[in-house]
Amino acid sequence: MYRFFEILPGALVWVTLIGMVLASAYAPASAAIFIILFDTYWLLRTATLSLYLTFTFRRMRENTKVNWLDKVKEIKGWERVYHLMLLPMYKEPYEVVRETFDSLVKENYPKEKMIVVLGPEARAGEEALGIAERIKKEYGSKFRNFLVTQHPFGLEGEIPGKGSNQAWMAKAAKREVIDKDKLDYENILVSVFDVDTQVYPEYFGRLTHAFLTTEDNQHTSYQPIPLFNNNIFEAPVFARVVSLSATFYQMMQQARPENLATFSSHSMPFKALVEIGFWHKNVVSEDSRIFWQCYIHYNSNWKVEPLAYPVSMDANAAPSFWQTMKNVYKQQRRWAWGSENIAYVITNFIGNKKIKLRKKLYWTFYKLDSFYSWATASVLIFALGWLPLILGGSEFNQTVLSYSLPQITQNIMGIASLGILLSAILGVILLPPKPEWFRPRHYILYLLQWILLPATMILLGSVPAIEAQTRLMLGGKFRLGYWVTPKTRSR
Figure 1 (spheres, rainbow, N blue to C red):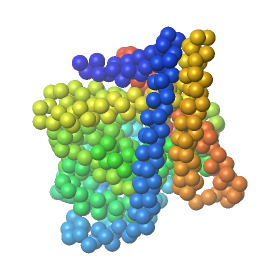
Figure 2 (cartoon, helix red, strand yellow):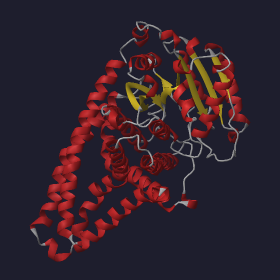
Figure 3 (cartoon, rainbow, N blue to C red):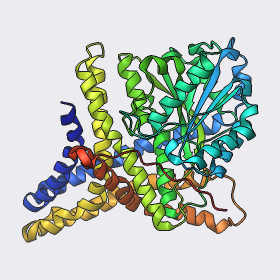
Figure 4 (tube, helix red, strand yellow):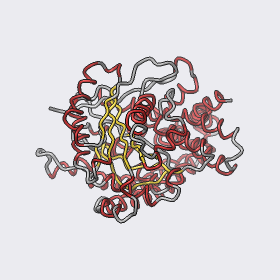
């Protein structure tokens, strides 16, 4: 049964793509009507998502202006809360890690409440360990505790990657600090950060306030908004569009928390992490899997609280344009490998009678729809809409429908492009402080870059998603391992 649900996402994608080609050839009128209805549906969906994006953007702007530490100090018992930060690393250069810790020490929150674990992979070699020890020497005294761990390579039952490393780091912190100092698990928030994640000055104040004011806070994850803009001015144009698109998608998700799962950098109670047995060590998509581990372990009594507050991360920027494109593709493929969670979720739903049927049906449909749309929507909208005209034959091409199809789809897409315009404007507003070379004319270029969105949605969105789901469908040697996105800095 588990294998069946691994095959299902890829099978749905290929049935759709092949079916669209066959329908265009043998039932072109039906295919054309389907395309018009599908485009109309996505026009309405784009309008809704644009409203979500605008709402979250306003909330985020308001939240970044608040002194959250002052608000936290108004809550009785706030000083009992500790923050455990896990920063797994691979071969990131010293400059990237240093920038992360520079942001941490500038944080407007008591550092004596912060426990830091920096965890290089053993397979990254002595250079990575040396960078970690150098960072500890420079920044270690500024926090309550600072641990450096080294995750061994080749442990049985593990996929080398963030999940297995984070489990190793959290267990080390539990053993060497938390249990040793007899800290209360319920008063510890564990935050998982990619090692390039830079926090804004009030982040931990915002996180602590959310933790102390959220109902049933021991069964809640806390999700910031990832802004992929640390090095946005170094990234090529396609990488910028993809990175900002990922940010905007996460912002939309924050406006509908009923659909929100954890992604990349996030936080959760340490007590729950211990009770579920830490991260699974044999998955690639550990950031979303931890949400499902908790959701199933606590029989659906788990939710994600959107912080509507940003953290800043790296966009893809390799030394060359084509290497950057390869890295963007591989990163998108790894994210799309999150479809591996569908089988885990559905099979655990089937055997669990304590989770309500409506919740099972809702999440099953939502997960399947999300990955199905990721792989097929942009291809159907931008690429396959012309197939009935090409394959439908001379008889269909003489009909009114064949004449109207390109006009109708063009008009629908023209209206939908207003959503692209909104993304372009917000993308410029979200730019970090400009480098010296940035001139007024660059604003125009950063607006016009969104013309490339249809191409990026297909080539760096749908195609890697199709590959990921196809690999999962085929299984065996086609399965993906954890690919670490390289981080660089121009010198």
